[in-house]
Image (cartoon, rainbow, N blue to C red; front, side, top):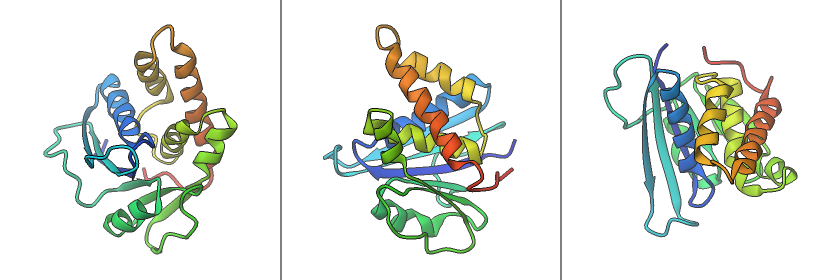
Length: 186
């Protein structure tokens, strides 16, 4: 498997770091190498939050991602900052609930998912990050849904297993919402 380089970005409190952490742990559970590098402002909630995730079958040289293959943007400022850095032929996943304009590039594939609205329909807008993780996995199946389920079960052990189930439902909803919206990169 070739390496997957991802940047996920949004406002603090949107679950960007958790999205990246779940993806990285799922890769590790499948025997892949993974790095997760979080970055957030001192204000945390409402400020900027970004993480990079690198998943590879072999050695990873650095967790730093300058030109990602994939961008997950949960807000307009993140789209503006990172979309120009996505490799030509890459993928940009946008939360259409938070970004009301098109991606200003024609050399990348774009998946727009109304993640906040979909998470609200599931009962909790805080699961918008997991909806976008599902959109990512539908377009780039870098890890299996089973591995994601296992990570979520570890993150929400009893007596919080209902939260794990709700997050899995958000991931599968995101996968369904994005199917056909972008062709797989691999």
